[in-house]
Image (cartoon, rainbow, N blue to C red):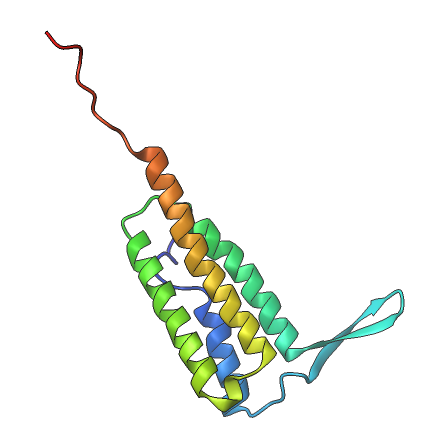
Length: 135
């Protein structure tokens, strides 16, 4: 898999920053509507970003299950991305939205899930040498 070593959740983070900062769009702007039993449900830009992040989180967790020498770099970059997201959420006014909070929470799940899966697979693959009976 060629995306090992690249945090996929960087994509919705970058898209959020481009939409909020460069394009100055409101994240509550409806992109499309979905027919439901009670009428029509509007899907906003923020909703689409969160859905994209959830799909990418699945692939991030899937990447965590692979045994690879690039796994450490992938985890390190995920931690750096999470730290950047927390810092931006706390320090930048236009990032203090519920959409960005959900993206940050998904990044936290990526960090914790990646470390948890790595620890579980490492403990399963650990081998211990035993000595034979004393002579």
